[in-house]
Image (cartoon, rainbow, N blue to C red):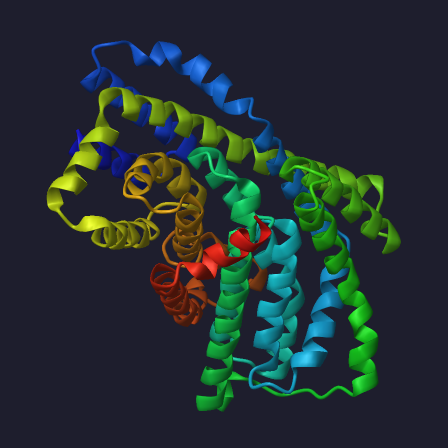
Length: 427
């Protein structure tokens, strides 16, 4: 059964069949091949049950928030301010890339929106100042991945929904690893530009009055973060309600920047509808597949197989990490989550691992799939904005940051408190 499942899944994905259709088709193959009951008759009920969760309403709100921010003109001023403060470091603009991505990750919840926003603002300056375009593009693609681990994160919401885990605790658990990962990205960039100065391009200098005046442009991001995360931990709003408050705050900021109009709102809503429809269709199809997998006993077989191998808890986690790393080369991030999480979480939780800790580890491993070829979505986003050269340049530039992510995953495995300290403090 396991061999048939993997073979059919890989064949359908290689044929470039849309992911939602692939999941439904795989469910039908397993239903007709291994079930004595017509499981397909429950499809409607399973889809309806999976779509009526209040938690999922947060997804379109966070997508809309990101779309409004992209069109509100906040990115350019934020990037300029961060550049003025980091220009003296080796590879100054590389740090501005990561820092800007970090701030936008703390509001939009979307890696793709973050990468596209930073790439649009930053790439023209890289060409003017002589930065190595491969490393520069790689830093933008890697910085964009922070959007799925730094709260508020759409992927953390989906994990919480699939694994029935507290979303506020997941948000708290993702903050320190996300900030630490951003710091490691910056240390890596500084180290490479120190060893090979030609990678860093021309340094620009700014006087202190310019730097201090620019800090006012960071206030919109800070306000949004306080509105969203602050309202959750103050007990004033659920994650879904906080997302709605964030949309209202983003609209207010757009109006302050004189970018709020019907045309901008229409484009934001249209893009949100397309993205939300794609995400929800994949989630609903995954619900159907997971129902079939549980009904035909594949989850139980996989659990028995892992128990029979005798790796123990740590060995099993290492095996799961290796599995995610390999699958990340071939399966898109959201699809990877909804296919694997319902299968592996019962095994991991049954071994006594903390659901919140495992959620952060999984999200970090899935982050790598955003910048590993051939389906790394952020690579294509940055190259699409770049509009010259080869996609291979972006892939090569992202390699050092993939290594940093793997190091971060190992650190979380060895020191679980990196993810669990803040949720414990906040209760």
